[in-house]
Image 1 (cartoon, rainbow, N blue to C red):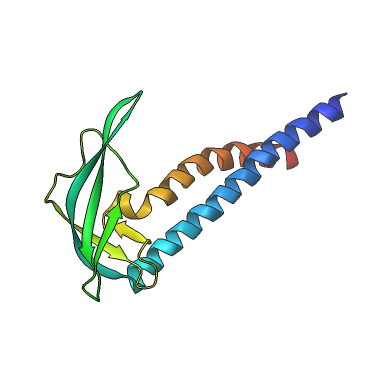
Image 2: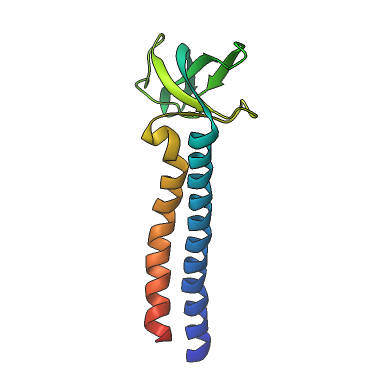
Length: 142
């Protein structure tokens, strides 16, 4: 009975640790993609042309819609994946962006949260899992 219970805890905390490692891996992948975009991407200035209003049970949020010209002078549109209340930008605001020369859908705002939000969020989830799972495994397996 005690061995079965020990195995259950070992699997649980081992799972925490494995999940933390997996999330850390994806965080590093996102960071590397961002670094590659910063090195190889094209930087330009985008202008907020519209604030899309979103209504839901939590209230009203605003999503900025940006327009920028690519290297061929074609006008492109970028809809931010982040909505906020109050709005982060006002119509007419200029923002530095970087985009992939091959994939115009790969656009990031050149600001800490715009560049690294995925990596930071993944590491915020992975860190406690690594600490809790790793501590248990180190304690029991020593």
